[in-house]
Figure 1 (cartoon, helix red, strand yellow):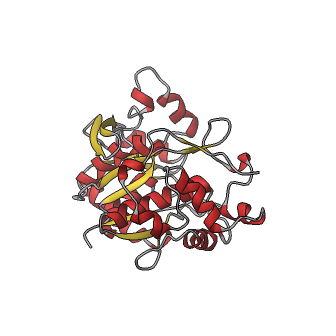
Figure 2: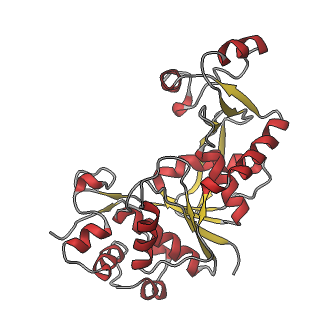
Length: 294
């Protein structure tokens, strides 16, 4: 095997059909290219009791297997701290004391491109920083030297997005998503990232940061979201949208799998069966409008 793909859910609740579809796509892209496939639990934020175990059980129920044991971000703080120290030593980090409201106001200002942070705290003097520290704990931001970066995506082609002074560590001391995901992918040898396309705009920031840390950016594949009846991203408000919901209504995991496989225009009842027919051109360009059986 060369390289690895991954699925990296947050254990904040049960996976819905859109999550399972994205996981299946990540598995298909990895297995069809002879890559290994890893499961990473992104548990630095909100964690619901029992969610991790239920998510793993649901993934296995639809035939998604993994290589090795699951990796948990909560157990990898030393890696994030070490990467942050390297950036600090290179003078690529500064303290930020902005409140959430100040950040929202700054991001909506006319001079902030596409909601980018305009560097409010970037050039504070030592005296100004000392005064600000008495008010609130500082977050740590990247001192970016670029305002945009271009990545290559298998489905979207060349994509250029904003790179700003994004947060590396929050004010509460928790490593920020962009830092953690880049460090994890580099450490785990992830060279293919398949995820929902609402994260496409994050890819330029992450690829830029990867370069600063000497990590080769992965091959990106941002796939369309699943949406509910109103056209918004699929969520619990749309009814029985989890595997467990569907089972309670009398369906089997194979029925749910067939529904997901049908979104690619393939009639299949197992992951292995679908893998034998898989072609990346089967991924639709439009969101999957989920039509659930009653």
